[in-house]
Each structure stands twice: as C-alpha cells, then as structure tokens.
Length: 232
Image (cartoon, rainbow, N blue to C red; front, side, top):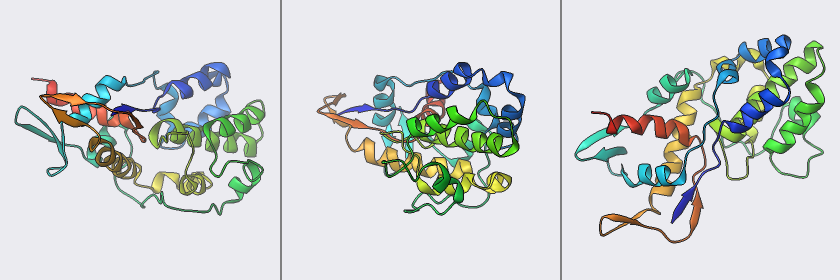
C-alpha cells in the first residue's frame, strides 16, 4: 500500500503571508498568548510519501517503537513536547466528542453543510474577521487560526476536518494552556501508526505496496522523532 498524508504547515504559512498577519499586532498578540503562538513562525514543511513509508516500515508494534539494526527508539509524548514546545501534562483532550456545545461553534459553523468544520470553511470565516480589530473579532480570529492549525497539521485528517472536541476547547482561550496537548498529539499519532503500519508488508526485504491509504494526524512529529535513529 502507498501511504499518503496531508499533514503540512504550508497552509498555515500561506495564510500568514496572504493576509500579512505579522503586520497585524493585535491578531498576532492574541495567537501568541496561547500555547500555539510559536506556530506563527513555523516554516513550510511537508513529508514525502517515500519517507513516510520507510518510517512506518521500521515500526515494531510489539515493542511500540522504531527499530533499525537492533537500535530501538520509543516515540513518546515527551518527544512531541520537545519538538513543539507543548505541554505533556494537564487536562486530557477529548477527541471523541460527537457534538459541539460551544457558542463559538454555533455562531460560525452551524450553517455549514459539512459535519465537521473543514480547513476551507475555517479559512472562509477567518477572511471575514482578519480586517477587524475589535476585541471579540481578534479573539475569534485567534481561535480560528488554532483550529486551522489543528485541521491541517497537529490533528490533521484526510479531509482537513477539525474534530468537535477541539472546537469546544478553543472556545475558552484563557484555559487552552491547561491541556496536555503533546499527550493528545502523541496518542493520536500512535493510533495512526498502528493503523497504517499494518499496510506495509515486508516481501524479500522490500515493501510491497498495493493500493493507497492516508496517514492522518501529525506525521511531522513522528518523522522528527524517528530521524534520530539514523544519526550515529
């Protein structure tokens, strides 16, 4: 199977450039006041499918770790915390919520035909707010920026949809730093590893591929962590 991923920072970088976000101090300050403020400065990144397939091929499900020539490396929430400077401790992030409860969601997304807010729907609302500088609009823009980051990068899905539990959490920007974000990203990625690695079949020392599949979630965190196995 050929494994693909849509996880990328390019869409976030494009938004920052398109709307000259760094020239809007109120919006930047609102975003930087959250644990995700550093992502304003993130460079464009995308993982090639050949690298992703190689990474998944060295995953050992019994040990829940990467293994190369006898070297073992576990992928942990602490790795994610270091890579993204996010906390691995705090309140659990509920990714299983089936219905949104926040006023924020109902204000901006109930008219959307899609079940979950997608990156394109989120960007559309952001575009309507980026020129406004009243306190509510600026804070809502910050919420939307974070949701867009979730949908395309940190909790990426095959259709760039943002899960309801994440939507409800960003409703309260003051408490968003109380959550164990690194732990949530780690658990989400491990689920994707287990699901995707089953599709990489070893045949004669090479990977047999038949068909296509998507590796959802934050594959870039996985890639950065696994690279250390190849460093002497």
